[in-house]
Length: 115
Image (cartoon, rainbow, N blue to C red; front, side, top):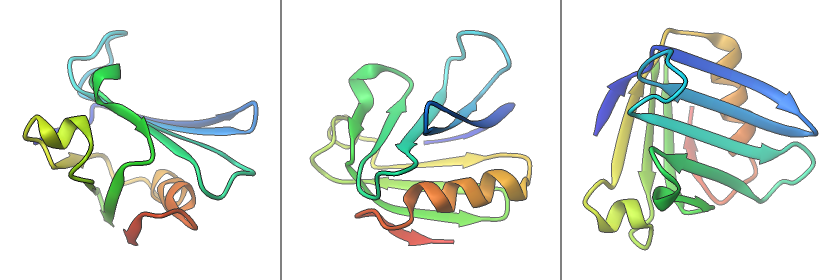
């Protein structure tokens, strides 16, 4: 599964880093990914892909970040992988701030990170 993000943002609120990618700028995009992690917590992160049905704390096996591509591989036990989507690729406008925030979000977690 892959999509081009038309709206890529990050922000920090209440010591939680949130990074979001969406296929449109509309309030309710069809395809989106939300990633969150407490700034002071080096282990827990949260993801949601297109619905709460495909969300969890943890559950990502590998993350590759290259220029304007984010590739996420989910663990086999995740609902999204069980439904047939083990890997998602998100193309976004190259943005060094978002790239660094992605690295920050997954650093020191159980994810194999390949920046």
